[in-house]
Image (tube, rainbow, N blue to C red; front, side):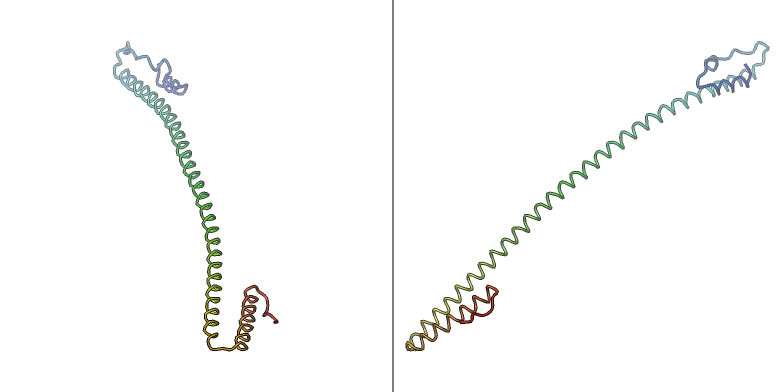
Length: 166
């Protein structure tokens, strides 16, 4: 088998059967040529095996890379989904807290208004009691009428109306 036949065998496909056969020394005694041919054949066979092994290992590596990529995508998607759920939960808690704050603000305003009214009433009662000691009936009646007008005026302003026309 000549060198040309060997290269054409290489083109046909990996590990052709004629490459597997060890060469017999030439009957004519040309040991150098047969030795070189043997070295070439061994190198060719090793190269083919290495190429096949490389292709197989490359395919395995590609499959493993795809598997790892899928696992990474699944893990990242799981983390994103968990973050999304946490974000929604936090938003709901914020809305609840905001509603509680508004409710407490209204209650505080109501308490402040009530305490101001009670404080004003106590001051008026005390001032009337103190005034009664020094006033006669006509002055007392005048003070009560003024107090009622002032109370109506204050109440009308708080309700958003104009001053009381009484």
